[in-house]
Image (cartoon, rainbow, N blue to C red; front, side, top):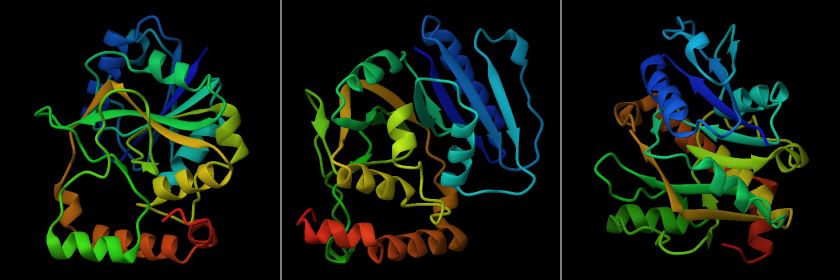
Length: 250
């Protein structure tokens, strides 16, 4: 079964080159296709012909948001599974076979691996649904404890970060992909919310891991802070969030 992997570059070609080499090295027996979206104008800095898997390139005439880029990639995807991956992800072995085997359970809407930092610490990539009270409390008390301990067997969670998510083609189509009203941030919270509301589970498989080489400098930008706050309040005022409240899921 083919897995379509969607990666979006914002001038991150060197990182994507590393990810592509990891896929070549660690996933030689897994049928994949890579859909690479260039969200800004940049040159492709590697030899596509040297790869054992096909690469489709989408060149945007103007930048799109996170969800719009991955939805666009899905429209040309040929795989049975659709995998959303950030460009700053690295592999130490192939996580795909275990993750797609999880999706044989039709009750699961999306699955994610455990995410590690380059130092080996576990990143906070699975969380409870946000509320204003939780956010204020975390900021006031500087709470850094994770919402979930990602150990042992498969874990059901509220939402997983969009740095690495796998869906069946049927489920991604069923829920109409990402909500493009979120330009950046909270599109992962929103899609996981809609999966839950559709009666599907969001799970983490701690038995497989990826490494996240996070680019933290942009997080201090006022532009990114504005996007983050805008997306937060868009989510908190959404009909999906109101449904979560009615179902006592918060």
